[in-house]
Length: 299
Image (cartoon, rainbow, N blue to C red; front, top):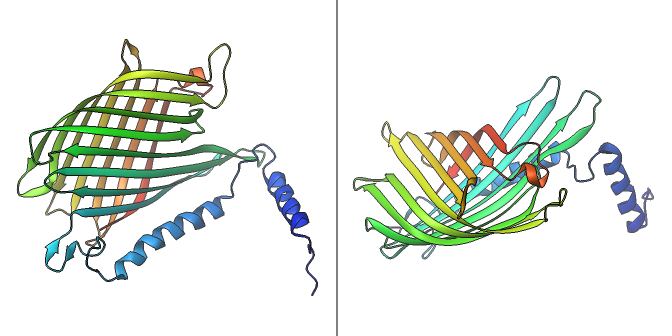
């Protein structure tokens, strides 16, 4: 049978028109099913690593290579939330974290992505959340009580009207660790950050970009309970502008994980963020928060 669209260009135009017709209010709309498939593929990719054999110099598997423990740890997470009724809402999130530690350095790198849609009473679907980010930190002398470190992050957020934000800084961290269980630890850090933010669009007389210097304080508590079956993690940060403590960012990420197997866990998370300049960039509110349930794969 002859294909209905022999011309690839004509077929691409037809698909673009179909997408716009499904979402006349938002050309950036992605069907929830497509997002679910992408997230499922991400999780299956992590699960496929479970059957991969360990090799010399590798870091995946059970955590031991040729009788020696590996300094690497890898974690993948897939979560979501669904609401239905007067306004249907669907959110999907993915996160990956890679850590490495030895006697000289300890590093942590995180990647995350969030996508959400909502449908009103008229059946119009629009994007309610779309954000991504990456953050990394390098600690020196991780076995010492006082640890200097450097950090950096980059992010973008549709709901908070951030086209691009990046920061870099350095500071000092005090760390208390359980010598019998490395998962039990308390970290408190102070640092100075140089930050630059590009707004999605200028509002009023405000410029669409801003460069700031911030103080940063961070408290993170991690605790394993009931024979490491239950894991509690709370990470809270306060970042005021260097000469104006009324202009600040406040983040709080809290999670409770229940280990189903040695590598798979079920996690309940509550994440909140306050940005005192979000409304100035055109956001509906300065405050964002969400709860979600996710599946975690850890190596």
